[in-house]
Length: 197
Image 1: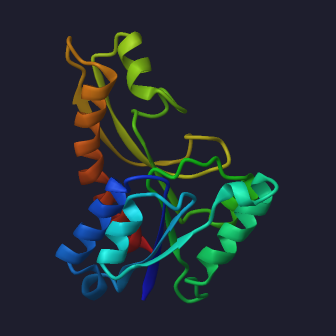
Image 2: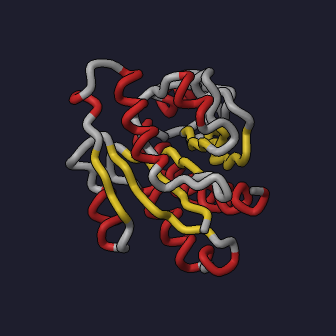
């Protein structure tokens, strides 16, 4: 079985979209894949309750309990690797995981570490993407699923979705429209990546 480990920091709505799609489309039967665990750096992340209610293993690793980023990433990798096997390397999916990962961690999972970013990369890497798109006068915005590389938000693009930027958009209204597209393209991109593995 190909194990998927999803990392979250909050509501985990993209994680939930992936879990729901995996169950609806019977990934265990069609791909030999399942969401095996959800890990959060925050104990109060609402997405943990969703994962538990679907029988998925959960774990909390509070980044504040570690002396530095490297120590946290080492502990995180150890936790993830409990779901890894040489025959079926684990797929690590970032779903609103609000931590910048060290190059060592990224390289450890090269080619199987996936993220979704709320902009049409390479535009607006980093934070505050929706307001920046509005301020720049963009006509469209969107979301990008990409493989993670040591350079923040610059890995190979797996999928994108475009939404129009409306004249009366605020960062919040734009974010809500982009999020509905994220919930569609992220499970699809994960599915296609698993098919290639």
